[in-house]
Length: 283
Image 1 (cartoon, rainbow, N blue to C red):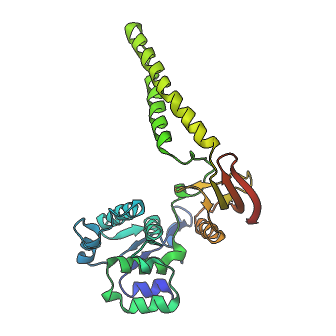
Image 2: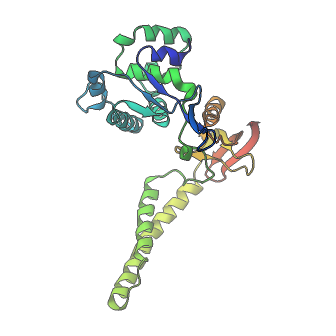
Image 3: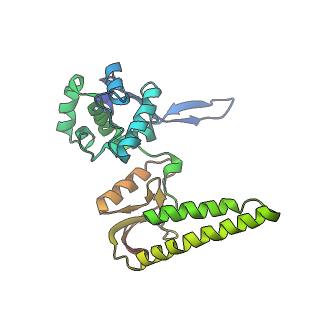
């Protein structure tokens, strides 16, 4: 019995993806796709849901850090949907919890570990059960299509000075949206020049910081085999510190309906040179 079947024995309901087959008006029909997951029902009790979804609950994690904030928001959305999570929602829960202290059942479990925890199902708390479920259906998890890779380049790391410049430049952009006449035009022009004067020293400081930067990142990137452009997803440009992490993300992409082509390449990132791709490791 595989892991999804074992989970169904404790009340987990897996809804597979479906496809339309046949000719409309003749034999048009909808059929389930084996070994796929469209959505899943998490069979937590009312007490377990309140424990993890309510701010007063003993297992509420929303205020811990950024990842836990995303995790809490996602689990509360699943709670509002009566415990039913779509595929990408469960993937988000899995990725946010994995590697964080206190979420041991979200780590990769071998068969003896999985079976032992499943035997203790009734004694697990809500998060432990969700982690076990994620482990059981992990090979079927995939992001939504719009969360897949793209060639769009994101801005560099945002420091305090970049935030200030961003706000100032955005205001200048909006100030020029409408035509002004007479005294209003003169006032507007004076404000524009004052804003530029404030921005000048900030840009000089930023340039100095960038010219003196010695930061360096070495790792791997997922790139387009056609253009060589570095791909990006919801987390930014697809950079990874080790080869295993890059391979894992590529594996997840291959589960998408329209799996993107990619290659894993060595990578060095510096401020002076940007992201420089090296040899192709895998395609």
